[in-house]
Length: 177
Image: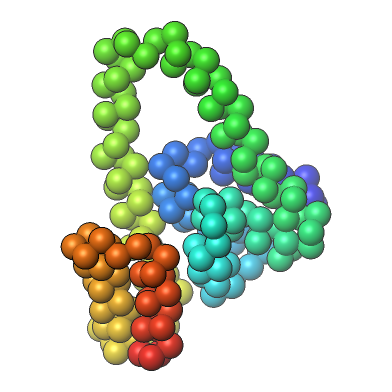
């Protein structure tokens, strides 16, 4: 079973372009298809992984592995998640150093930006509305949107440090919910 855990996160690690948030829906799909946890448990894992330092996808992989198989599962899933990226980064760095002035290479990086942005937006929308048992227009949703907008304004307009925004959002969640 540890081998399956490793292979699932190697697969996720191979296609995790755009960072952790962009790949969270894939992780959720894989975890659900394996029967490792339900949507509510996964959302709790994502919340904890998002608060911990480091990549949310790697943190989630570690927590999922630990949830399923203990410390060894956490280690195996973490290695599975980061190994493809490590190998790909080493390979791309070697190639990029030789081809960094090529116009095709520069253009391809510019072309990836909108795709990655779209994947992150989709992941945010999917995460916000998945597993909700209450109506779309509810006090719970209004509170969530209020906290989200407050965080966005705090970070963009007032340049509040992200750590402070996370703490303030947690306090707001306690007060509102």
